[in-house]
Image (cartoon, rainbow, N blue to C red; front, side, top):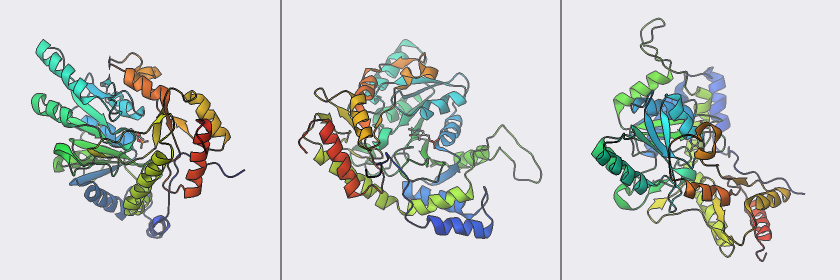
Length: 381
Ligand SMILES: *Cc1c(COP(=O)(O)O)cnc(C)c1O
């Protein structure tokens, strides 16, 4: 039996070892060291934003970003109900409440038109408006931000982007053409967890165009310690720094980002072509969007076996496939959260599976996945 094909594992094919050794040689293994500055600098320029602040995780980056966007106890933050739970947990850490917004079919992301209409209705009725919007670029497909930017314009509602899965994703049409996911809101937040587009083992990054907010973010991630001698702190900060060791990995990974994105896009194209005749819907790919194709995910159509039967059969064939996230309005901590719709997210969850999408997935491994999926879905081999 050949080895198991994992869902998404790191690909450490560049200067990782060399840069880690440099850390050991220089004794810079903790949160001081040249790789942290270098990673921030190179990341900011890769995303096309003036400032980047390294954080201990993507969740930490979101927490700090939301707080700096003015979110606090009692605030309400509109966020996609179809996302990894960290998107909403960061809202909860600030003392705010998430307002869970259903997905649109076109991108599986937060339905911006529907949110826009509801905010307009509330404004007319004199009802409470959300204090911020956190748009998640789910599975690396850019979210349609135009309606959200209009809400910022008209009602001053700030936009924070959860781009944890979307490093390298961009807009190729519309008003945002040429810009990258994460570079548009007041803050963009990225994750370098082990299964993300690039990894530092664990880590995150906050980006912003505002120098003052970037300085405030750095301050908050370092326990709000003042620069003068001694232990003086002017507010409650966090221990959210990234270590120099992790940043060394980050610099090495970032050097390979163009190759990683090319590999992910090639995987997606091959899956799409090889599964086109089966009863499945391919992942969203709007004409105006260039997704990162972080995790190739499709929907089973009527005529396909039930999701769990498909996952079991793939598992038995040595292939790690996964269901998508249960929407947040189905998760214990958020079942009673206010929700706008939810049926689309429920449907995506019920029918969705993710297929192996590692950057290092070989052509042979991908062929094994394709043969197994075709077998389960009764396609001809
Ligand atoms: C991974 C992820 C996060 C959290 O990032 P961590 O680095 O794991 O804390 C947040 N939001 C989304 C959408 C994610 O996929």
